[in-house]
Structures are given as C-alpha cells and as structure tokens.
Image 1: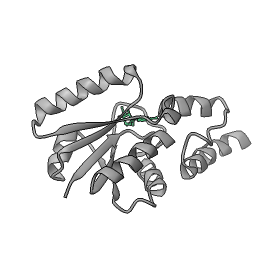
Image 2 (image 1 turned 60 degrees about the vertical axis):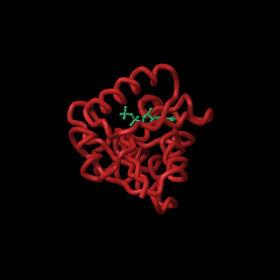
Image 3 (image 1 turned 45 degrees about the horizontal axis):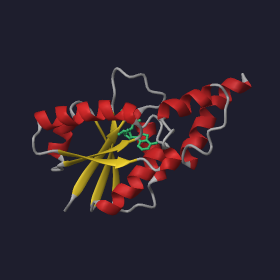
Length: 163
Ligand code: ADP
C-alpha cells in the first residue's frame, strides 16, 4: 500500500489545497490530509473545524482520510507507516521554505521522501492567508474555497455584522 501524507495548517482549506489533494489521490493508494495542531501560529479555525471542513471538501475521494497531528511530522509519519510527504509548490517563494523543510525532514527521518506537486496555474496565487485577508476586508472569497469553507466563514462573520 502506497500511502502519502499531505500535511498543512489548512486555515482554511482552499481550492488550491483541494486540487493538490485530488491529484495526490490519483497517484497514491491512500492519502492522509494531516491538519497541524499549531500552538504558536494563531489560527482562524480550531483544528476540529479545520478537519471538518477538509472532510466535507474531500467527501468524493474515497481513498483520502483526514487526521490531525501535533509535534514533529516525521513522528506522525512513522506512526502511520508512511514514507511520502506530499506538498504543493506555488512560486519561488514557496520553494525556499519547502526545500528547507524537506531537507530537515530527510535529516530527521532518512526514510521519508518529499513529493511536490506544482500548483495548477488556476490556483498559483491562492493562499489561506490571502483568503483570510480578502475575507476580513469584506471581499468575496466564494471562488477561492470549497462551498463548506465558504459557508463556515460566512457564518463566522455574520454575528459580528448583525451586532
Ligand atoms: P503550511 O503547511 O506552511 O502552514 P498550508 O497549510 O497553507 O501551509 O499549505 C499546505 C501545503 O499546500 C504547502 O505545501 C503549500 O505550499 C501548499 N499549497 C498551499 N496553497 C496552494 C496552492 N494554491 N496550490 C498548490 N499548493 C498549495
């Protein structure tokens, strides 16, 4: 069984993440989307909310599982007996960061391999951070995120707007 792990903060899960997941699911027998429980990064959504949103978005992909993890990714990989880390690459700016993490993970766990999927041009500008910024200033984010994520983000802002 060829199992890969796609780790990330996914705060929130965007159409770019979904595209990487869908393509990854055609390459590997099983793909685990692993939501990072990040203690220092201030997240918009709790890890439970983020997991739920990913689950809704990948419901059409039977070989994709959604989990969360804390601490070192390589420890999570070893527990799940998975060797392949799937990541997405957008621009050169991603490359430096991704290159560092991939080499660090290799150092920590030589059996791991990081597998990169180059973003689909339609999503090359798309980031969770960008989506949150547009959303905070009242812009439309409907075309950037899966419908379930859009719904939850809208619910989040409504009580404030009504107050
Ligand atoms: P991080 O893990 O650094 O917190 P994210 O959760 O935003 O980052 O993203 C997880 C992974 O998905 C990273 O490898 C990131 O480069 C990739 N990714 C994010 N947005 C896109 C996109 N639009 N197209 C392709 N890959 C993407």
